[in-house]
Each structure stands twice: as C-alpha cells, then as structure tokens.
Length: 319
Ligand code: SAM
Image 1 (spheres, protein in one colour):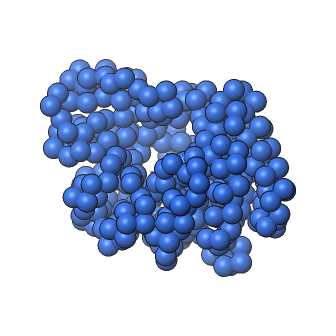
Image 2 (spheres, rainbow, N blue to C red):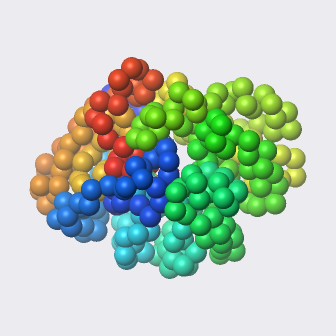
C-alpha cells in the first residue's frame, strides 16, 4: 500500500519486549526498565493477528526486535507461525547475539533466513564497558555459528560514537575481508540514553568514508538504508547508515508495532495507535493499520530541538 507521500509500505518491525539482557550506555539506563505485566505485552497470538491483517495492506516483511527478542521463550514458534502467513516473504531478527548461538539452529529451522547482530566493538574490555554486562565471546561464537549454518545475509550493526569506538572503524572494515558479513556503521541517534552522548559522540560518515580510499562503492538497492562498499577480494561488505539528515526517509518502507500493542508510523513519531484492546476486531485493526500507513510522516525530526516529544526510547519502540 502507498502512503500519502507515495512510498510503498511493505515492512513491519515488531518489538517483542522492552526488556534486555544488556545495558548499552547509549540505549538503556543502567538500572534497566520498569517491568511490564504479562497482560500489558502482546501475546504471540496477538502479534500473529496484527501481522496477518497487515499483509492485507501490503506488508511482506517482518523483523522481530526489542529490547532483546531472544529473551522471549519460544520465539522459534513465533518465527515459524509468521513465516507460514500467506504473502509474508521475509522474517528476520535483530539481536545483540548473546543468546543466539544456542538458539540459531532452531530459529533457522523455524524459517529465519537472515539476522542482524548488534556489536559495537571488537575489544573484549570495551564490549563490557559499552554493554555494562555483556561477554563478547558469546557474540563472536554466534556470528561464527550463523556463518556455519548459512544464514544470509548476516549484518553486524555497529553504532559508531566519537571517542568511544571510532578508533575501531579500520578493524571492523578489515573483518569483512575474511567474514561473509555486512558491517553496518550506524550514526548515534539522540534518543534514549543516546541523548546524553549525542553532542560529543556524533559523527559525519561522509567525512569518514573519504578517509578510506580502498572502499569500493557498490550499487545500492533502492530500499537500502545503507551506503554500501567493499574491499577488493573481500568476503563481506561495509555499509554506512546515516539516519540523521533524513537520508532515507524518502524511501522508508516500514511501520512499527511495539510490545505493548502500539502501531507507530515512524521511529520518531509522537503519534501511535494502541490496538491491544481490539486486536480481535478485524475491521478496527485494519483501519488502525491503514491510518498508520496513510499518516506516516514524510520525515523524522530527530535533529529539531526538543524533538523526542514522545519520550520513548529505542528499546521501547523496537530498534
Ligand atoms: N537487543 C537487540 C539488539 O541489540 O540488536 C534489538 C534492540 S536494539 C534497541 C536495536 C538496535 O538499536 C541496536 O543495534 C542498537 O545498537 C540500536 N540503538 C539503540 N539506541 C540507539 C541510539 N541512540 N542510536 C542509534 N542506534 C541505537
């Protein structure tokens, strides 16, 4: 379905929980989040209803995220049920990778073909300090396992923050020489705990790209959010994602569903429609999804002063 700005909306990003097993310094407060009751969080059956209804409006791709989606027991069942839905062509997952190596074979059997793994440093000690609690070895083990069992593509999401991990750009680029992964450098956004680090930590990727003349530009697919490159004879790719400056709002193809049942037209919307109370009412649910698509804003306003008016954090919306 086309929105009011002529964009084809075919992608639903679903947050399964706002809880996480890490506490990344730019994302979640150290003390974590207030626990929601089970009754406040969508059940798998409810998520499946929303996905099914969304397919009647043109949704073809679903990504599960959070919080950390792999802390939800039985997520392989959800992936299986989702991939069986008529017109769903792609089911994917964004995870911090901590629990991935122990679950990825079940997830693949359930229908998962590809995965995005968040990893902001290749240094063990720095990983602990960025995530406050994480063990990098588990993530590296998960990446190896995803490669071994043939998930494709495997994307590594790396939020680059000046003064914290921008000294590792070369190391991440080098990783793609040997590993068939797409490392995607992502700009820090002024959302959640990121607001506190933003002014000091923001980076201009156009300037960074100029510092790496051995990067060979690749042709981008129209809906890609990343500027893609590769090194000569490398197995992997490198992407630069600059969400600030609205570089890809004009080709944005997604709407979001939060774990508490709110449909959001844009990561940054103030507007959301909570459908939890009427998920079994097909007509109302359909109207809410249609309205979210039609009212999707032309662009986000992250850089405007006092812009995070909804006050929602990335882990609550679903990153
Ligand atoms: N727990 C999963 C993970 O770590 O991938 C999924 C949820 S996490 C919120 C999704 C992505 O959002 C991660 O790649 C994380 O680095 C990113 N993220 C969180 N806060 C951010 C911010 N302020 N700016 C940019 N990316 C952010």
